Image 1 (tube, rainbow, N blue to C red):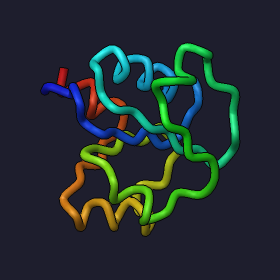
Image 2: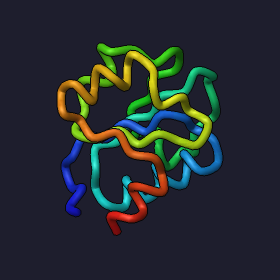
Image 3: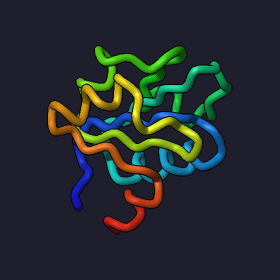
Length: 100
């Protein structure tokens, strides 16, 4: 799977979410992060990663080519359902890894 130039949202920015972001940046994806709690981002991401702190919403999720959710994120929530209705793939971190 070629991720270069794909707009990808990572939902949940914990330890594993940060690892996913690093991978996606290396793959030259256009990366955004959402987490309900504001967290410190590594300076390496400051110019390359878009950040959306706060609750996940439909307006945000429907802007992307792919959404990757971290463990612990509720998969059956309205914002993610809206993305699925628009045929935007929603994968867990393991699902993303399986593609590679």
